[in-house]
Length: 423
Image (tube, rainbow, N blue to C red):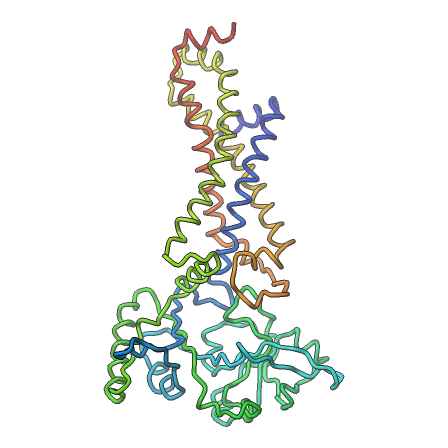
């Protein structure tokens, strides 16, 4: 506490130095935190995607043959009779990504104009996997699913466009609204949707002349950390059971299984066109550069300031002050300035993310849901514990790089030489 009081006193004495130090730190921290915030939002357990840290995706199966390998979609019966019955996952869900290449339209309240909407086609277990906050009503049930009822869950934004109606016209077919959810952010890519419907809804695929049983399913698993080995073992058993009755086309399940983290980094590789897995080095190099250049400038400022303070330090050493005590004081004084600058930098990063969120997140993402959208930013996306831990770590590293070395070399000078500087 004594060191921080001394730091505040020095700040009042040397206002220009303090302002430049804080500004330099703030800009460095802001740039680093801007990158950290973008990817924190993509990987953290943020509602409704509360299982990101334990999620595995299985979009396809790999068929290996003499000519190489090819991809095979997961059929309805495989999802129902094999994957959905697995015991090790905490929960399992499936989505038909039919609308990833087809556009769907909803009639507005006037019954004349249409509105393009993003539709998620899924099954009842989806609402256990993704935790939406229901404002009104409930999710569609297993009975709705089995009875092929045309029911749906909509966002509050869609409900407003319908003027509070309990039904809607989707692709010229009527649907009853069974539940209304808080509009999810486009930053939660997997859970983002305007309308959620069961894939068994009568006539859902009629205009495309296909049956829902023919549509492949993307499967997602939520697996606790202590059950991952058991989960892989059970998947191998599922694979063996399938291959036992389909020996002409044996599949490899594990090769296409990816964690949420792996999917995010794979997208980052594609975004920057780096395909050799070295994206970690690019990110690390960028962060170090953002820290090293400001630290070099701040180090020069600290060295210049230390030259002016050497007579003071010499007098204190002459009266018995130890070098480590003086070094600790200098580091703590600079740490106080660094923390103030870090807090300012964090505020700058938050302001930039909120003000330019329509392109900042898109610039660091290959997510098509962000095209032309202004994503919703929620408090938990910006105020997570990991964000503060990263900010504190960046501040400490910057302080050590900028203050420790010049202070150490200055304090190694003999007392007499330091006293002579005053002349």
